Image (cartoon, rainbow, N blue to C red):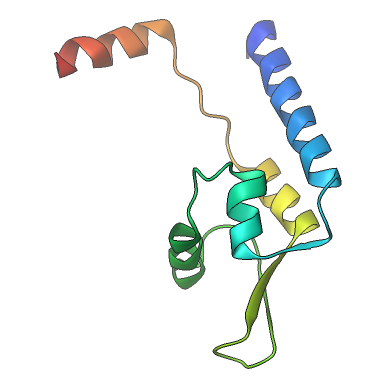
Length: 101
């Protein structure tokens, strides 16, 4: 991996870690959507991910089927750390733009 990309990935990772450290130990789906993903991942998407077995590990408090959903902040950080870094080279972007036009 080129040095510049590694540095950018490290900065994003550090920024994400700092943001997660300032959050409470458990997050509701709404709080996770807004505070961690900036609203880019909706509560409905998180619900779908739970049904599909994707996304961060969650807890259900109370009733087994209607209980409150909570995400441990540490589990979210672990899940985010396990995701592969998505990178696109300039030549790949140009190729995609040319085919779309």
